Amino acid sequence: MPMLEIEYLNVRFSDTPVLKDVGLAVPRNASFGLVGESGSGKSTVLRTVCGLVDDWDGTISVADRKLGAKRDLAFYRTTQMVFQDPYGSLHPRHTIHRILSEPVKVHRLGDTEARVAAALAQVGLDATFRFRYPHQLSGGQRQRVAIARALILEPQLVLLDEPTSALDVSIQAEILNLLQDLQQRLGLTYVVVSHDLAIVAHMCETVAIMNRGRVVETVATGALGDTASLSPYSRQLLVASKGYDRAAVDRFVDFE
Amino acid sequence: METTGAMAETPLLDIENLRVTFRTSHGTVEAVRGIGFTLGRERLGIVGESGSGKSQTGRAILGLTAGNGEIRADRLRFHGQDLMGFGQREWRAIRGKRISMVMQDPIYSLNPVMTVGRQIVEAYTTHHRVSPREAKEKTLEMLAAVKIRDPESVFGRYPHEVSGGMGQRIMIAMMLIPDPDLIIADEPTSALDVTVQLQVLAILDDLVRERGMGLIFISHDLSLVSSFCDRILVMYKGRIMEELKASELHRAKHPYTRGLLDCLPSLDGPKAPLRVLRRDPAWEIG
Ligand SMILES: Nc1ncnc2c1ncn2[C@@H]1O[C@H](COP(=O)(O)OP(=O)(O)OP(=O)(O)O)[C@@H](O)[C@H]1O
Ligand SMILES: Nc1ncnc2c1ncn2[C@@H]1O[C@H](COP(=O)(O)OP(=O)(O)OP(=O)(O)O)[C@@H](O)[C@H]1O
Ligand SMILES: [Mg+2]
Ligand SMILES: [Mg+2]
Image (cartoon, rainbow over all chains, first blue to last red):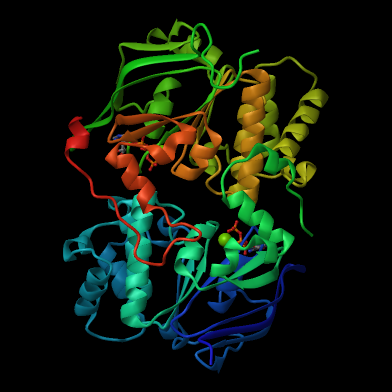
């Protein structure tokens, strides 16, 4: 059974359909990529799984359990999300210790001190970081804290929304390596949303390509090199991700 | 007309030994430490890791260094004019009109209580005498040019009512509308998806080629810069490590530039761990 399975997911925001019959299946311990142009619905898929969207229908199953309208506390021990903007998602006036200990308290896991220390160590930060505030950290360190906060509840499924888009390439490499290392050690399952096809190809075995609320196609990342087999929309996305080419830009079309 | 990459008689920009130093409660921060370059009617890329001084270089050229900062330079000239001696009045005549800058945080630099349409109209009418109707038409044209799908509707929205990617394009429209000679674009396309990103770059590219504008393009994205720009400056801790022809980035010699290139995941690359940058203290002095 897949770790995450979505079938015929439809989402509306004030009567505007934003997701249309989205379906995907992510095997346990796999990494699954979601790409597509801005506004195509990538974040909405993750947010719906996480219970941050009210008006949806279809089926979503996580770890063989079908999700209802509301997520209970237990759900968040299985599934955690790392948000698009690490700065915005960490409370600016809370210390790192408070940011990390709060989920432990909410879930009454006990051993707060030990868990916080372990979570920091897992993402390569030493214990002195506990006393700092988010603005006293670099972008890469903040992203590590956001990952630590997701991992502290020992989830099996982690949803990563543009995990490195705010970071420069040297820190990006560190974070991507960290994520892969944690996946191997903890047996995690990832869904990775990114604008950057190279990141998705590096991290994931399979990728779903989205356009205007639909999954256009789902392919093995190894097949991205063979553009002839792809749909015209995916091919255009690949052409665009290969760098600037004035003539290619003139050939871009809007896909309905 | 100048061809791309060629140097005009007097360069648009001529900088030598530029330094930007900030005073803070923990001591001084040397954000830019003695850099020099010239710019013609071309696309110059500035790359380098976070904190290397890219934005502060751009801000210094526009006289926008924060109050706790000090600028020094042996030469800082725009069209042969010495920018170092500029007062408020001289800056007003140049900023926004002849040099403009697309800032790294678009939403933050827009006025939150004014519709985006009015802000662009204002950017235009400050420097051009036209009727309100003409100004609005020109604004709608500009919004369409930066690939905003529904210019009429976006015209009437406030900054918090547009997405991050739209905000970036609105800023670009606002900077382009006065028709400047030099544009400094600081990570102008980082929130855009790959297709829209290239469409926006094509607009800047055409302006450089057709109107002979100069462009400084600041970005983290090495492969984008190498395919888009004519020349590249690689910065590290406030200094220029290496200057390269953009098309020859992959042949970079400096170990810092090589290190950055090695960090990049690739579409067909192995899934093995990425190489991470190992910094050499000698680069700081070099
Ligand atoms: N709370 C909301 N109310 C109304 N519309 C929304 C809301 N959130 C998202 N949308 C719309 O839903 C669509 C999908 O948005 P979503 O954030 O999922 O896109 P995305 O693929 O993640 O884009 P990006 O790459 O820019 O992050 C967009 O058209 C967006 O404007
Ligand atoms: N007002 C200020 N006071 C003190 N230090 C400052 C100030 N503004 C910037 N700095 C410092 O100057 C250095 C250069 O900053 P700059 O914004 O130019 O970096 P950058 O290369 O643009 O980085 P990024 O890619 O993250 O945008 C950094 O170390 C930064 O912390
Ligand atoms: Mg998103
Ligand atoms: Mg910057």
